[in-house]
Image (cartoon, rainbow, N blue to C red):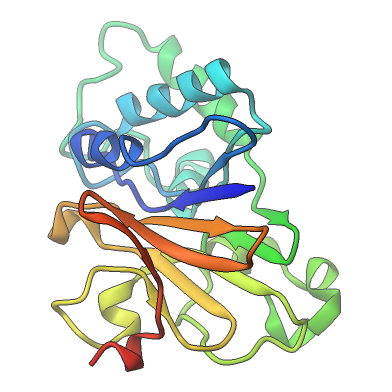
Length: 226
């Protein structure tokens, strides 16, 4: 099975469409979106509609959308769906906002495929094998800083939330960060880089790739790239 993942779209429809063009959902392939669809670019509500449309077309088992901290903020009233860049989207039909909020309310905070945990921010790794019971809602969507190293629970963790330039301590890096152990971080800071990294897992071989316009490349640990 091929599993694609991307995260932190933040209202940038053009970058999202560019990333989607690299995804092949034929056969048993899946797409997992790790949250933060809004706030930043000019198209937050439109990005929500695009994701909802993909789920309507392919089904929610094939296109999985997780909750990010920005959706959580919208649900709690801390930050409306519309940010400064996309203000006025709901002026003609306020019921559209209610429809988007209702969709957000149903989003899960994590998703497991085989030995891979997909999550917006992270899990409570001190809980080990009991991470599903030991992780609170805040940690799933807002864990900070990014944790690296070997997870004692024996699973691979794929997350967004923290830009890979921050994880790598390299302002020029916006690709997929692998720590050489249990973690892959895929938030390419689209507001700065203009691109959304596309992660691909091949569950038959257990190998992980970054998909780009120039091809599909095995992901190597960040420290081995230099």
